[in-house]
Length: 327
Image (cartoon, rainbow, N blue to C red; front, top):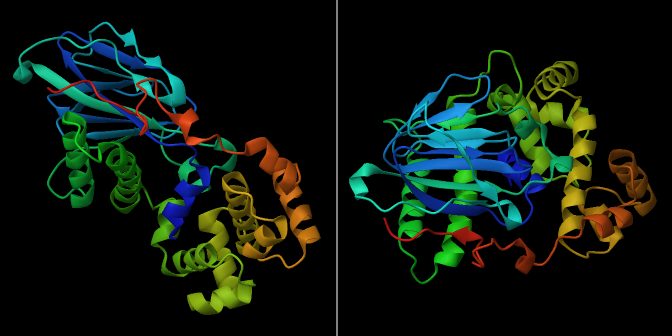
């Protein structure tokens, strides 16, 4: 897996949720702060994105908004419209209020939803994202992101055989394409950080090796040779861009990977230890407790994932997706 995919997998829990809603002016929806990551897509029409501390942003059809840290935002047909709170239901899904009747051309159609996240396992790549990411639909934007938005719109517009399986997969793909588009085209690189780290040939290569093979006995010298730099130059560049030394990051990533395995299954602890590069279960237990404050066994008992049935939305859909009927 690549670094961006790993960053998402480390923090994701449960299934994503989405609901489609259509609004006829005047309207305004306030989405209260939430523990997950919210997203909003304008499928039809226009509206305004309102967030504290920022100027109103006009949105058009195909525009995508990601709220990585779950802060409060609002969407409205006008900056002066009254805002109505949107209720948050089971599974961290946003359920819109009853929809108006009206002519399709007069309506704004939105897809709003959320990804459930475990902030305790947050990868720094995601932690440094801005409060709100706006990706306008325009010539030159990721064709893949445009395509997945179109597919989601089609699935939400009319339920067909396979919709319950298709939508969660498309929502997962959309999150990946949003982050890829942001880091490749919008994230500032001049001041360092993860955008620069991913783009740097030497540091990016080292990160890929660590993530692809966490059990390999990596050393700074071995990674620097792979990167084509001296040990000192590699260590300095890695630390500047990633924010921690190579071996410190590797240990952190191994423990984060182990935590994900512990949350998701019942593999024996010695097997988990070997998977992340520890031949000694005792050494693994000690390293894990330094990172998370509890033993691997206690962590597993505390963070065991609920069955799929508990992650369903209030609509009762097994995919956690609520639709609002055809436009």
